[in-house]
Image 1 (cartoon, rainbow, N blue to C red):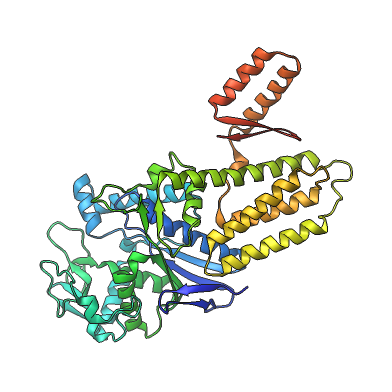
Image 2: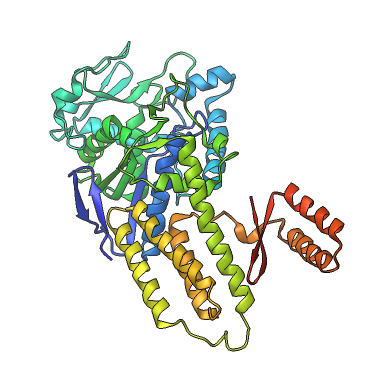
Length: 472
């Protein structure tokens, strides 16, 4: 397997080679936990979940770190609004974040380090930069000296003069140059603070990731990821801090996903068009949200609309129905005379091998999920045709299920927890009773059961192997 990744640093596709054979060190910038995450936040959450899943499927052990920014200006303002302490606000929205990503079928990161739990590490990192002359204290603050780091701007491909042009200087800042950025903020009256060699205060935004990434993954990462909006200033500043400290590349591969627009408008609080994950999962199937996010290449912009969500919902329903029919057909033939010993026929085996190769080729090409989904739909078509064959064998059906399961283990487009539906036992009993009522021509009872199933949002489908049910 040779994975090709578009590296934002070099602006070209490069063959992926991890620092350590068989292991990938991946750091993705996580949320500032002052509110519920919105669908713009959900795009990197879902996409990098798929990257991690694919690398694990390929045999790599993935150390996947996603941080929480649990102290900054936004959290301080939110705490003031709520009449709460900053740690309380952070705890509330970290819990909400975990609930939201679980609803989206996103697997938990290996580690979610929090800024407030790493203040000593951050202070030590800043002190190291001061000692090397890359940072300087100024009346309780500490700033990074961008002019001293010769490669400042290499990630966003701008020179230092372009980066400094139009930079907003906040009231009270005491910088040598306007392009310098803050590493440590002196505390204002009433703000949350920690003691430091430069006085009481708290970390700046950029330094936290440099300190925590180094603590848990070492001086150089294999992959550093996040949204396109983080490329400058956040990731640019991380590069400057980390490489000034270690003299080594911060990351060998940089990956950035594109923006999300709402009905062709930029998503922003000022426009009031933000949509939270907490809100949307109440009306849209989680797998449809994943499909929507993955149906466009991760580096391209993505437009959210009701039409796009409806199309995604229809697509995942087609996948789910195919898989359910497959499992239903297997249950009907498994153990039948001659079926258990039958092998996968050569034609099916060749088709599945070709589809698996196509899927792998697309995922290896900079994680091209839209084309990988095309391969998945080829599998859906093959499944539907095979299930309808009277001579379908146990082993053939199992081979289809195995490949469908493998694709889903990477993309996560099948309904969550489909095999542990709490209504399964009740629904099966009602279907059996309805079948008996119809045989006995007890139409009134059959209609009562049909109405009850409708109330439970259960759809019944007749198949050659009997009745199959699914949720609406």
